[in-house]
Length: 289
Image 1 (cartoon, rainbow, N blue to C red):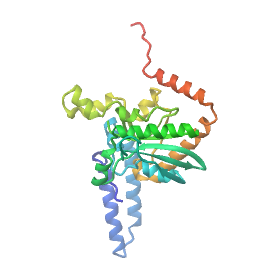
Image 2: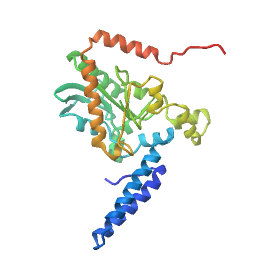
Image 3: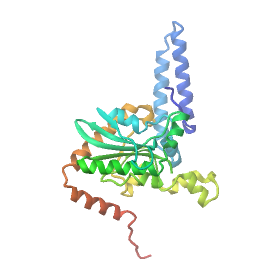
Image 4: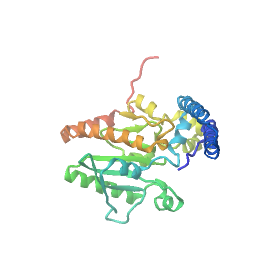
């Protein structure tokens, strides 16, 4: 799959285009241009490192929405040796925006629930662009209760508009986001509202979306500093879509590590710690001026 570059990545795109052009020239002639290709590849990498070292919150939001970014089912296929999807809420319908089922990671059984967007127009419509309806959350609740009945750990992957793999916004994220450990991929976002939605409310114009993105503190590093996120999972250079296998390996290692830690703690202690953690969010102390 060809790499789709975002607007702030255009200098990188231009270098990569030159590299591809030289590769075609080299394959059609007897000229040895490997040295020039190597030089341009090194320059492209240095430029990528430089650009990604100082990304703005809005640029990170764009990365979180990248069309080639791995989705929940991509991660499930990469980290699970087995996965059996379960459907329906047993009341009304099956919501394609929420997927869930029984999985196995390194011989450990667990329940996995996550948002799923679509790759093409037909699938996006079927999955409502990753935005669940009530039946989606009823399905999620049914699977959570099933996991509780059989004593299975629960892994949720959050990727919905307005373990956060891409966008994590509003009640759509919070609905399956109550957890013992919250992990965020490096270039994902987690917020009560999208930057565009925030800008429309506060400034009556989406033109202020970049200001809104900065004010919302929606990036992984800022949320980690605020104590809302337990760990940031580093992504491959250029984002998870540049090397999905490496991103999945990082996620799997973290999931296995936390499963080993949390399954050793009694359930009552986990529930008490989870409640205390949630109650601590937003607490602040006033100081004298």
